[in-house]
Image (cartoon, rainbow, N blue to C red; front, top):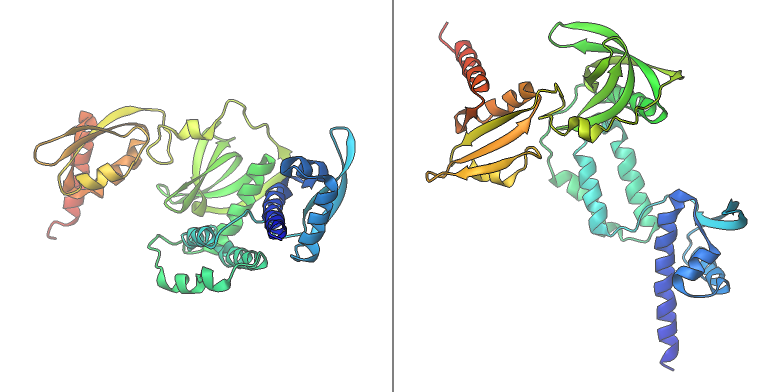
Amino acid sequence: MAAKPKKDAGRGLRLNKIIDYINKRTPYGGVTLKELAEKYEVTERQIRRDLDAIQNDLKLPLIRKEQVVDGRKCTLYYFEAGYLPSLSPEKATAIFLGLLQQQGSALAGHLNDLKDALVSTLFKYHYDPRELAVEKLQNRIHIVEEALAEPGRVGELFTKLVGALKDCHRVKIWYYVAYSGQVTERVVEPYGLICKRQNWYLVAYCLERRAIRVFRVDQIQDAFPYTSQKFEYPEEFNLKEHMARSWGVINDGAVCRVRLKFNHNVAFRIRSVIYHPSQVLEEELTDGSIIVSFNVCGIAEMKTWIVQWGDAVEVLEPDWLREEMCKLAESILNVYRPR
C-alpha cells in the first residue's frame, strides 16, 4: 500500500517540473511531447496524461501549435498567457522593489501596469496574496532618487528610441543643449542606451557631426522616427567596450591615471563600493586614509564626483587635474564671499 503514495508524489513533482519547463520555453515557441518525454524519462503517452492534468486539474490553459522543427512536423505546447519564470514570493518581492526604484524615471509610466501584471500572474500560479504584501511594502519603503519633472513625456520619447534601437532605423531629434541654451535638430542612428543614476542616455551616431555622441533622453524635446530609413548597426561597435573607460557617460578618448587620497572618515565607504572597474586600492596610510587610483576618460564628469566629497578627498595626480580642482574650489568660494 505504501507504493501508491510514492508514485503519486513522484508524479506531482514531475508536473511541477513540467510546468516550470514549459514556462521557460513559452517565449521560445514551446516544447514537444518528445522533448518532455526524453527530459523526464517517461513515455509520450504519459506526458499526454500529464498535460491533461495540468490543464484540467491545475487550470493552466495550454496552447497547441503545429510547426515544422528540423524538417519534421510536430506539435508544440506552450502556456496561453502570462508567461512568468518560476518565482518564489521572495523573488517576486525583490522584482517589485526594483520596480519601485523606477519611480520618477522614464519608465515610471509603466510602473503600475507592471506591478499589476506581476501580482496577477503570481496569483494565477497559486501564491498566497498575503505572502507578497506589496501594498504594505510600498507604504513602508521610501526611495530617495532624483525624479523627472515630466516622466510621462520622457517615457513616450524613451519608447520611440527603444523602437528605433531595436529596428535599426534613424530618428530625428530636437535636442536641448545646456551650455548654449538652444534646441538643435539632429538625425541620429541609435547604437545603445545607458542608465546612470536613473537617468537614461542615448548613444548614437550623429549624421551632422559624423561621430558618436551621447544625448541625455530628458533633454530631447521631441523625436520623429524615420521608420523607412534603416541603417546597418556597425559590427565593430560594442557599447560596453566603448564605455568601459568612461567615468560616466562621456567617452572623450583621453584615458589618464587619476590618484586620489581619501581621509579616514570616508575610507570605509571607498573600500565598500566599486565606483569604476579600474579602481585600485594602492595604499593604506597609518592615519587611516587611503590612496585609490583609476584609469578613466571623461574627467569632466569625474570632477563633479570629486567635488561631492568636499575636503575628504585630495587629487594627487595628474597635476593638471589638481590645478583644475583648485580653480573650481576658488570659483565656488567666490560664490559665497560676502557681497
